[in-house]
Image 1 (tube, rainbow, N blue to C red):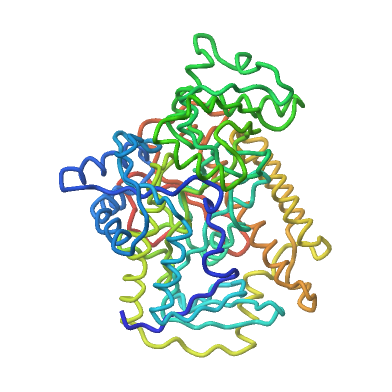
Image 2: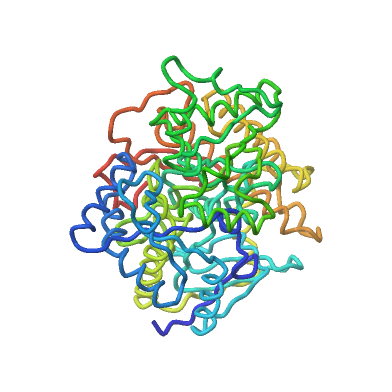
Length: 528
């Protein structure tokens, strides 16, 4: 587009903390093959979302999916079509899309393409505030590794900061992912939607920590024992449900979901741990049963981890993905003019259940759309004004000057936050626990501005953003008083109607606010 673009990143490109890489067999991207299939794909997305999605984005994803897929083909990314191995992805209805069989090849390809664009990359910077002037985002403030304040002025800003998987003690995430993007946007008044909808996948605790178990392999009925070696699953099955049927249902999709009886496998893991019987269940596969072509990639992946298809693993639900984020209007704007979002930073694109492969599709489709919208906004405004050191410091004071303890160390704060989020925001939730954790997090929220001379200053900002992101997350969970998809409320175990709408949560002047967007109403409104 001929624009002067810079990329600010805390970590090197390719190691930025994707919630999948390198802890799973492969990535999948969905796409439609023709016009009639586009309509089928749209309906699949809508069905999985269960009324908690803006239909515009479901349509946009479906209609632009083929072009996104073909772009990857043209870039030489190695792909294996799901139809070749007869695999139906999570919450899908037919074999759709393709697996990216060599993730490193894709990362190499993206690095090469990025290097040819003239984008200037600045790594090792941690963004602490978004600059907003008269309601318009005009850049960001960041800290360098030495704690120096860096001011970046821009006509448009795109958030692509990932999710908040690292807020949990048990997560499948390749980086910190403490929800900083959510905190930065909400602190300036942007609404976040569907933040309560997370993906919890069965993953390994031992011998490799944080590795996602290939869910479809559960179809072959591996032995599943307690940590102590007992046959315990039958104790957690409701009347009329066999262990075999539960495991079969759980093999249909990776993420935990309340809509089918496969959920009792995950709940059994939680109950065993609660009883003090160890963390996780022992999964013992039969390699002879894992001979179908669809397990070849899984076997190759296990080999890279020093395991085989017959290797025993101790498994437990792990937080793997966020389905919500910053609310997008249908022109891809947010509540803050000049601010855009994509990937796990964006909200309204996925509902409580996200089709397997829709997340990668979204990075390609919504990522491009956000860039085009950001370019159009940049064309329509003048150059951002200069910012003095005093003005930059006053912006920091506005964001971080209220609340927080000067005495808690950042590493201790993050650990305490993770403990609370794991306790109340995990697979099983209830209002009492969520409220208790919100109060507890208030007590461990650090005050970064009291440590401006500390050589680890950026750690205080990281911990503060983690605390704010955790409070936004738990508040969103508290506001949705029903069970839907991966959101399971013990005190509200039933779904509240077919159309759940989208709840929003925001943070301004240190206060969290919540609300609801009903399906079909207010999708494009800027006003909270």
